[in-house]
Structures are given as structure tokens and as C-alpha cells.
Amino acid sequence: MSLPTLYFSPKLTSCKTQLDMLLSTHGYAVEWQQVERINDSPVSSIILLSENDLKATDWPLLASRKAIIIIEKWSMEASIEWIKKGAVNCFSDDDEHTVSWLISEISQFALARSDRTDDDVLQVIIDAIPVPLFFKDHLHIYRGCNTAFCQFIGFSREKIVGHSVYDVAPKHLADAYYEADCQLLAQGGTQYYESEVRFADGSIHEIEFNKAVFTRSNGQALGQVGVMLDITERNQLMRQLDKASRTDPLTGAANRREFDLIIRDEYEQQKNSNTPLSLMTLDLDFFKQINDRFGHGGGDQALQLIAEWLQNQLRSTDKLFRVGGEEFYILMQDTDIQSAFKIAENICKGMSTSTFLIKQQEVRITLSIGVIELDPMIELENALEMVDRALYDAKFNGRNCVCPVYPS
Image (cartoon, rainbow, N blue to C red; front, side, top):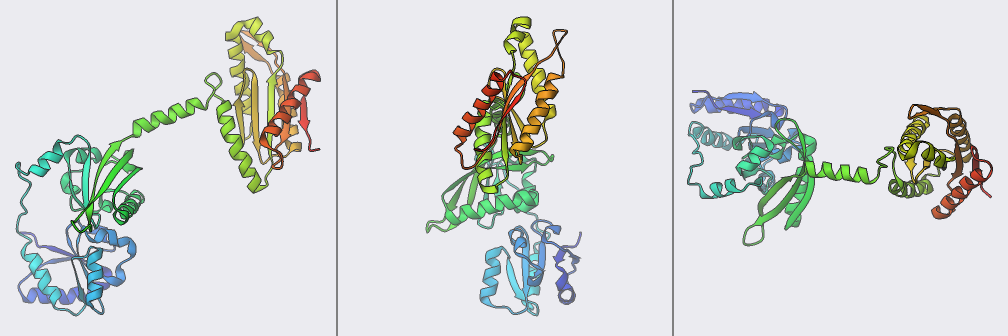
């Protein structure tokens, strides 16, 4: 029969030697294994920990092990505090009661724990629930779950029950769950939130949690019960629908709705950052002639080609929007009116010298452009009206040109 293994933290090396000698004196042989961290020891194992080796980040793992805290100066208050954190006991480093406690635990080592029987009515009932369900104690240790929960995260019940959330999830996710659990137990009642969960196969899923605290008759929290719903596909669909609602389906550029959302956000940020922000309005000249010549299919093709051409002219910080039939906006961050005017002139000249192949025919297209540097002292609606008037001025001045709005 294999010997029971006792785990210990680095600062207990000398203490471990004394304990081993006392255990041998009373006829008990064990294997000792030093661990740097609590989670280097198996769940439910006996681990002796020096209080000087522990950090607050270790506390959530105490209750998933049989943790014995060894302190230099024992007191009832200190012992109770550690037990409240999840330790099973607390001794001073020279207390022989440590040995008697270890012998008590080692004596149980060979006893087999009874498995769940088929007439475990509560387990049968919760296993029948198709929604993943779990419950934890007040120290955040899983004390039960149903089959759906096991299947959901891809772990057996044996790898869940008795374990801390830090034993079944990556630390960055476990931190989020632990924080939510602490908040729920502190405030009581129910809790709803969404969070990522990593399944046993490594895949990340978006999960909706609905949890509630269960209490004693005096109101003291005993733990929490929760159910989970995988909303990954739902959220992906919602994001796709949201993106579609913000995107022009013909050109793939952002649409007017997206512009209205972004411009207000950028405008407010500009007020706080004092960095220049400019807007360019572009309208295709004589676009009706393209529709008349090639039909609406040719017009659609022209818009697609132009949007692609414009996108290729932009810097990484610029944003392109199709806001009307043949009208586009370009929002330029960290760009003053002089720089914006030069960019607009380059786009105007570049467009006029480019050719586009529409229905196997080469076509030249020109742009009329208005450009403005947005002024935090001017209402956004007024600024948009001013740059639209500049665009109309460019049309009136013969098209294929740029009209800037300069501060008065």
C-alpha cells in the first residue's frame, strides 16, 4: 500500500523534520513533498503551510485542501481567523498537537469514501435538470453540481466537487469568478452577469451566470447556487447584427448610423484632449451619368470601386463612411485644417487621374470635397452644416476641387 503524502511549504523544512521523527516514533510512515504554491498540491491533500509563506492570493485555495497553518505565536483569535479563511486547523510551530491531528487524518487514509448511490435523490433530481447547475460553500469550494455542468465545462464530477475555482479555471478567469462570488456572498440575494469560461478542451465560451445565496435560518450565508447558459452563439449573432447595422452593405464602409455614433464620441474626446480633429465631405461628380450609362448595376460597381480606392488612400487613424447615395465622409484624427486640406487635395487629384473599369469600360470619376477642422467651441451640428456648405461651394466652383472651411 502506498504511503500517504504530506505537503509542506518551504519555510517548514525544519518543522517537517521534527514532525516526521515524531510520526515515526508512533509508528506512522509518510512521504513528504515540498511545494512552492498551494495549487502544486492535489485537492483534498494534507498540506502544512507556514503563515510566512502565504499571500492573500493563496486564501481562496485553502478550503480545497486540508490546510494546516503553522504560526510562530499561537492564539485563539489567530487560529479562528485562519479557519475562517478555509484552513482546517492552526498550530504553533512547537505544538505537539500537530502530530496527533496528523495521526488522526493518516488513520483515515486507507478508508474508502463511499460513492454516490443511485438512490441519492437530490443528485438524481439535479442531474435531471438540463441546464448546468452548481453550488459552492461560503469558502467558494464546489460542493455539488449536475451532469449538465460536468458536460458543459468538460470535467468529471470528481475534478469539480471539493475543488476551488482556481483548480478548474485559468487564474485570470478565476479571479473574475472569485470577485463576483465575494460580492454576491457579501450582499446576499441574487446576481446576474456574463463572463468568459474556458472549457476543458481549451475553447473559450461566453456564459450567462444566474446565482443566488442560500442561508441558514438566521440569515448567515452558507453558500451559493448558480446556473449557466452558453450565450456564445447568441452574442456572436448580436455582434454580427450590430456590425451590419453600422455597415453599408454595398461598399463595406461604415454607414451614416456609425458616423453619428463615432463623431459625437470623437468630438467629446477632442474637447478633453485638445488634439485637432478634421472632417472631409466628398461627393462624386456627375454620378447620374454613370447610372444612365451603365445602369444601376454599373453605378453600384462604381461605388464599390471608389470606396475601395478611398480606403486605400487613408491612414490607419482615418475612418471612411458612406453617408448617402454617392456621398462619403472621412474623419481624420490628430489632423488640423492645413493637413486635412492637403490630404483632400491629394485625394481629389488622385481620383481625377485614376481610371475605373466598369462593365469592361474605362471610366474617369472626379470628386468635389469640403473639409473642416472641428472646433470644440462650435456646436457639432453647426460644424456639419458648415462643411456641407463647403461641399456645395466646391460643386458650384466647377467640381473636381476642394473647398476648406477656415476659422473666422
